[in-house]
Length: 549
Image (cartoon, rainbow, N blue to C red; front, side, top):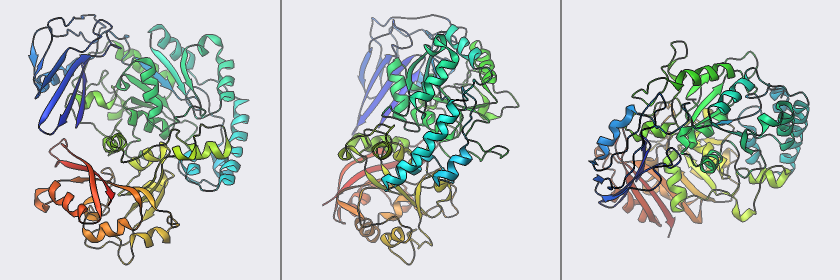
């Protein structure tokens, strides 16, 4: 497994292969230019700093970083820096702020109720739903409606209260600012014409729906962080929609939801956020965000990586805090607020080892059918994936956002469909947690999710954030028995991949050897596997990729 420890300005990566652990310790050059090169290469978790390690003691009113020059330390000792934040940064808690546009910096004049009625998409993310359609003409017709409504809104654009004051503060404090929107370049230009060239020049980069990566694809914010030379957890993503929060949480930035934005129905109480869509903090408007940032500037660092005590009226999600990787790195629990969807690390591992193939663009089928979005040749489209155990759909949506055509399946898929995902209920369950009375193929066909085209990949991962009355329903381990593996083989391409993450529990005799033997006995061959530790006393988990023999 790989762990990134980023605390007190130091970057520590651990890579375990077999019984050997390699550790590399070095500072983040984005935070302190003086600490620009790696310092340590060692094994088995012992860390020794080089003699020429420079120091930095620049004070920002929140923390002081002094890089050790000659000491040795264990990973556990480094975690004790959890009460210190990075020095050598601007005075604000974030080194960069990324804004959505409509409903965040501008008043939302988009009539989403009309847009949904005319596109025939009553719920869920519009782009996610349209990308799942197989009819290019329907995609183009829906996009024409969206363009018409957006153009009308751009003609009436006006700034949100407090926008200029917030931008002025960020500029004065030396904080980087970016704009990411799923709107058109023409709408962005209308916004820039409104604010004038001085403020328009502050936004760099400016990424519209024509950029290859579009919200909620986490590669969008990873691109911004890389362009700035910053780690994502030092950034804040600000927006008014679930997709704004999801992209921030998935990328590892802090996320801020501006309440009352254009994606909420007027007068309706907002639904409780689903896993992966709970913001780090929620603000009533841009003046509220500006006040919190300024109050956090001189606040002492807290032991939970929070840099401003949470106001009593704001609730636990109201504090200004760093992105979740900063908390995870120092061994602190990652709570629901600001957390990524369950299984995100598994998804990243699958892409790394070739278990899943994302697309070169977030919504390539929409781009090909209607234009206005980045697309790519069909051979570069993402995999066609069946995700069993989709639960609330957090991980399913992350796969869909990377240009994969994903069908979810679970005992209860109401939350997943609320996100705009294609999801199939498995119906009654047997003792093995599989569909009762019909095959997997039959269940898919009955719900219009099987047309004879096999899946490129099957992902077995239970969304741990999904509250299910039957805890084992859709659980990956229930699909690794011989009969269940035969069912999976019936819908998997001969060149496909079976991808699974399974809890290793001694009580049920689920262990790596048993899993590999069961899979290899079912005309599949395990080609990659990995055992990872889980926090909070949870059992270890085994990840694997298998191919048909």
